[in-house]
Length: 286
Length: 157
Image (tube, rainbow over all chains, first blue to last red; front, side, top):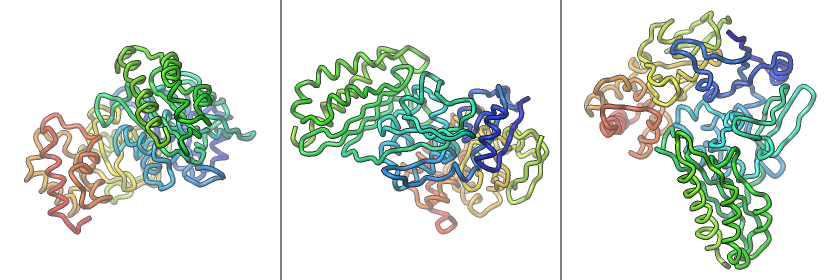
């Protein structure tokens, strides 16, 4: 049996994290399933657990310079109910689980669980989000695509707590979120696409394409995005097939209980193709 | 071990227990409130639904340590309210109950919906109950029950 703690402040939580190595427990909807033991028994946690879901410091959504900060203990329902949250993130959250779980689950938990199929993670990649990590010694902000390093693996240090998700101001003019799963509620993704772009005067000012559950981490290519940004839709149209071929090389799915590599590859590339050719390049000025 | 103070159906409780135990087990095993059911134990089926501080949660996903100061409403509490009675009557009239295992959870999800949205569309009712599985009815009669409760119980929520 492991110990559990209910710190009364973020400072106390940070000390517990550093001193006892306690595992932060916000919504717990992943942890309760991962460490589930027998019916009626306490879950089989590998180390001490510390509840952080009630901490005021982690319960805020606030506007910051050029963006939005979402506290780590804010539930998915609370994010959905907030006016300033970018639409693509809301669309992603609405495909996650069902209302009862969304009332408990957090985006921070989805991030720290670091599943390649995490739907909010995919949308946050497209929004170029970052995470704030605090320890007793200080804090740092890291882009999400660097923070998540592999399936179930993050760059969270042993004395750190993920305290905020930082979303830069969303200036996109178009976005597309698609989740492919077996049913609408409570299904884990076979794959997901999250993509945003800002188009003005027939030019791509910004574009970000993220593909979930087709590689060890969400696929996003800064290099390919840079190739398209600042260019006219007409120019990009001429190179579209080359760009799609480059994305195709990055999409490296596996077979598992939810889907097959062949299916994932085909559908993911159809969605990327649809976003680029069917949405972006159909904008005015193309 | 710790002492957890919380209320269930309006009655205060102080329970000495391991904070990592599930709310579901505290309700069923310690307090003999067996209206909540354990279906999947993984948050997928909704049979263990309760209201925690007014919002729908799966009690199999909730360690009791996170309930300090919380107000929990179980099916036993809901059925004693006028709103609960309206839902029970509407479910009965609609034929929304067959084996009955999912029914308490369905009713909690219905109550959560009607508190937020007293006149839901069919689509909104389906979304609100999307975390609750039923293996008997095919759902249509349950959705009828939800919409009938909203209609008959107008003004209650």
